[in-house]
Amino acid sequence: MKETIPRVTVLMPVYNGEKYLNQAIESILTQTYTDFELLIIDDASVDSSVELVRSYNDKRIKLVRNTVNMNLIATLNKGLKLANGEYIVRMDQDDISFPNRLKVQVEFMDLNKEVAISGSWIKTFGTKKSRVIKPPTSYKDIKSNLIFGNCLAHPSVIMRKSSLDKFGLSYNQKFIHAEDYELWQRASLLVEVRNIPKVLLKYRINEQGISRVYNEIQLNTIRLVCENILKQLEVNYSENDLENYYNLCSWNYNIKINNVNKLNDFEEILLRLYTSNEQKKVFDSTEFNKAIFNCWFRLCSASSSYLGMNALRCFNSSEISSFYELSFYRKINLLIKCSIKMNLKKPSL
Image (cartoon, rainbow, N blue to C red):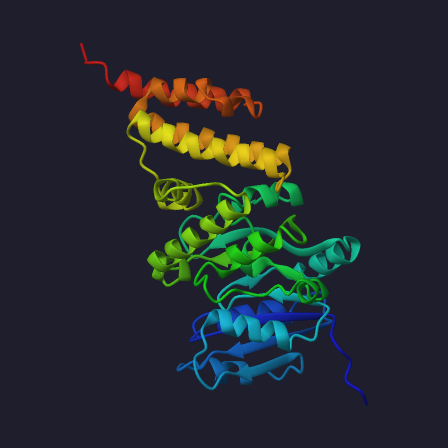
């Protein structure tokens, strides 16, 4: 009897993942949607990962072993080629998918044939404080926001295999530890990318996470992504411009703005991005300008602890402040932040 080809391939690379692997596998095997294969590619683990996978008596599990350690990107690309499913769902070895994840994602992709890649909202866990991360959901919004950082959670993603094949989309070996960010940014120029506004994945935060262990390598990779974006917009840039833009894209790694000149430098690169997009129309103007506006607001807000009311003056005097309507709440929030700095400078009586 001919074996039925599953509609979905869940792609899970594994390397020394014995600690949490059972939880990740169980969360897939107990999905309410059942027409899938779980493609686990072990990247030459030296712990008991392979034995754990083999302990499951479930025909949906397909175990492939790399004879030597190939690294994550090569393993992911191998998985894209081996996947039999119409859809490829990413899953990490230490995360947990909610039981309805596959059902929701398959239904969404079936209803939205124009979408090639879709992520979801996620809930973090593994630390004392859990939080729900809600990245933008519309294609235009995501495409524009990708100029300032990753807004698709890699292990939450479902991809249409036919779209990947049609446009030759795969992970680029040059972009180590930020391979997903580079792929989403590149793909967003060719295909429609979205996020489903539902929490479908529990994303584990731990001290051994890629973003923590390989922080310096990841930041250098983000710099390469920034360079690509500047080239897409045909922005003429100096090393200083690239450094400023890179600092915006790696926002989570802290920007210290303790003088007005530094704030002005950031404003300049934002305005150059705006001007280039107005000419080239690479991104939707409304969403792109909104992304620039929000970045400018965050910069001025972050600088308020150093610059006080000067930060508010810089915000209001910039052309960028006219790109989008600032809500009353955010106006008050910025005013309070700047005022607190001003009051702290006053000598006590």
